[in-house]
Amino acid sequence: MSKEQPQRLKVMVSSTVYGVEDELERIYSKLTRFGYEVWMSHMGTLPVFSDKSAFENCLEGVRKCDIFLGVIGCQYGSGVDPDDADSLSIVHQELRLAIELQKPRWLLAHENILTARTLLSKLGYEGSEGRRQLNLRRNNVLSDLRLIDMYEEATIDAKPLKERKGNWVQKFNRPDQSDRFLMFQFYRYQEVQAYIEEHFEDGPPFPMEGGDA
Image (cartoon, rainbow, N blue to C red; front, side, top):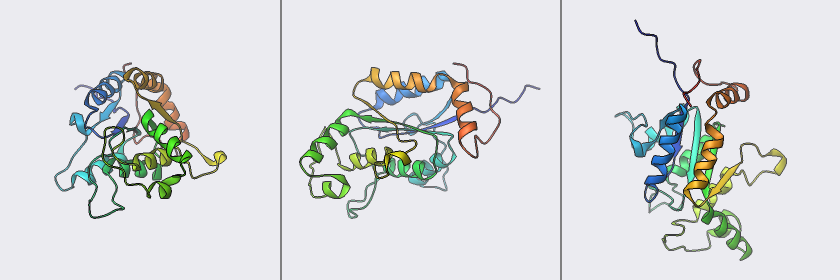
């Protein structure tokens, strides 16, 4: 009888898909090669169950993953109710849940988001409430100003500096920049595993062996 295969760390990749398909496929390829089990809706590897909606399956993935990798691009994503001004996209909901659950998380944000945030702040449109005064037409730079909200939530911008933990968000605007971040954060599988076991109260839900990076 063959030995049972050790379970690998599960990485939930949260991102919109439109326009960043190549980026997501590179992320999937790299993380898989490093030894992780990658949950990504674009690649069809997110566990889905027929008694749940698409939203529920995505949020369940956040709850059950060991690592959350969020990519905040220039598209806000699907799932927004046009009749509800407070409705959030699914990727925004995934990010909020990952923060709420204090998941081990790594975030990438497109440079356009940081540039827009700085510019609007200098023009007096600071914070989520300030930006609500603007009526942004859908465009190829930023589809929705709530992308800046996502960045600020990921950086835990509302808290004093000394209280911010897990607030690193790496900016990128070229594939080589995001590839470099992924390489240096994830290719040492055993170190990531040890970090999670040491710093997160519940640790991973099973004993694990190293990846094959």
